[in-house]
Length: 348
Image 1: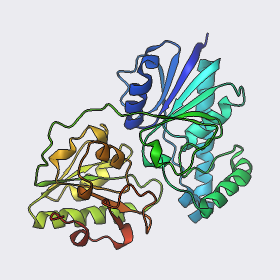
Image 2: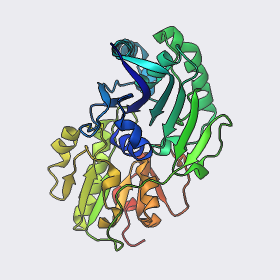
Image 3: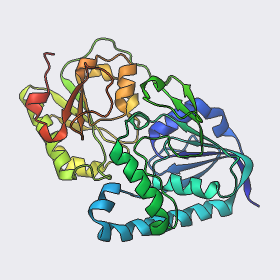
């Protein structure tokens, strides 16, 4: 007999788990709840029904850049996802008043899962929770054209509609979105209820900033933004420059990042230390570092929320201009123009 599910959670990253647990933790304890989670998410404390899902790679940039070589692999991944979803359907029965909770509507597994669920009912309630900058980025003409191309081509190519999502929270069935800074939205969907919340994660115990260490939030390059070699070369440049100033570089890898790849090269630098990628970046006490460098990461929202000085937050971005402007005091550098000795300044 199938287990009947009233509350369905899809958790892809440790941070999504942190937010969902804070907002809907009581529902995670119920027998009628099911959590589908990525294998990078620690799940020992999840006591309800749970199933592990695979993070299937889907890179829009690779698909457009190498359509003939990458298309076949993408089609295979879509088939694997659909097969995985069917296994979930065989094991569980979803209630007519199902409530769905997500951290993102962008990844391929989540989109195909939602497509499958909404074939059976339009009465389900869909709620998304803030996972960072993805909810606040601005859209341009190119994004609208890509959205139209996805609408027309993905049903033909993959047999299912996939949505082009640059700004999270655009899947058409969304009812609620919980955000930490809804005031940063330049527009809102009138059919969506936006709810502001404050993240109650660990607070910093120090108010005075310690000197001698710089924190860097790295990123996975699954989306093909830049090559692994180019990314590591930039981090090497940062580490070497800091070594001349007798300062250490502490790297917090992304949960989906290849730590072995980082350690193979960067581990040789004496002033570089690489942390684990299994805990969330928000668990770090920012005030133990005199500068924080990120690659246009969502972590900036939490750093600002903790009242860490804006002029000590350095962002390296993949666009000539930042897609979001929090404050004129936040320092930004286009990645192709980056040079550590020019960008990093401890006297500001």
